[in-house]
Image 1: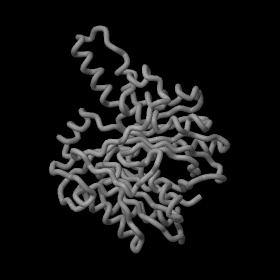
Image 2: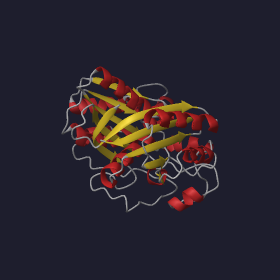
Image 3: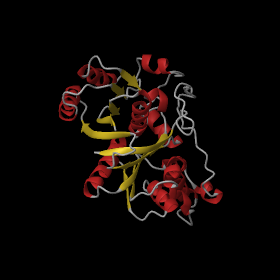
Length: 331
């Protein structure tokens, strides 16, 4: 598909700047909120108008935008700046549909993130945002892959971003998406036998193209499926492995297991498809959010680069209905 050359990850862990994954940051108030980066490069007047999602994306993208040239920007997000959207809707009521402040509306649209990054870098190339809930980032990556097939000499900024907003947290809590009991560690999360997970947020950016020279890793294949049947997921994974891995051995299975007892059968069944392979989880690092698979891709690149792994298979499940597989290889 394409090669990954540089990455920047803003998450609840020390993944930005001096990376230290041995010093795992604790879960606070049953949430894993991203550690916001340094925003010195953003003018203060502009910074004050930014919603959290746009801030996170800007903080992750600017190190790449300031040093590299891109032919386009493609972002995956489930909700964009949902908090600003709610603020704008509340204004409609508060001001009786009178004169409203446009800032919250502008910052709330899902394509505000990609457009803001284009504004920062004066990039007038391809600019697209994919909003597909748990498969938003995967569809963004497929979009980039198709663009590179058509324009193999181009380079693109690919990203995934989502925020924890108070409104979304309340709605998802009522829907049973989050744990009711106190969770303070990875052991608490994965040993729990209850429904729900812990929310997270963050942003990951990738500089990608078709050039192998200097690449950190290669995203070889992506597969997605919509289903709530375990046997259909395992059959899809079997076909995915046969098609893209063949007789090659797998170095690591990176599981999106999130502590939700309703989703555990999917993860357990998929692990059985690849027996005797090392399995690691990542949701205790970033929390559960729609584009957490972008964090998983960053983590796979990091492990390939620093642990000298041959390849990594990522499986992520969102709400028990949207499933994705990504095969990442050493470049």
